[in-house]
Image (cartoon, rainbow, N blue to C red; front, side):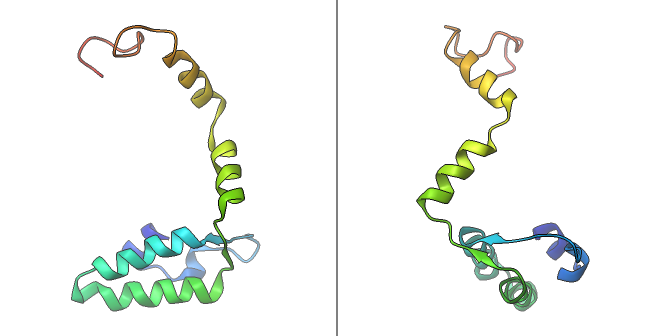
Length: 102
């Protein structure tokens, strides 16, 4: 959505007819912060986009259950391996990185 806003695409250009889309309430809050922080030139355009998103896409409550589910399913197997590896080295940087690259 942010990339679409930057490229000035319409919401219909970003979402296909067959797409099953929802937006988290926290994401709407973040988009609204972008509206508030925008300069005078871009603020009304951003507000129109966020209003269009909220009017078109169902807003999903982002409660604690959704948060826990999101955290659990967001991790890839690689994330889990790297997290496990962090507990096995004593150096302040992972062993697979060269000196000074951390």
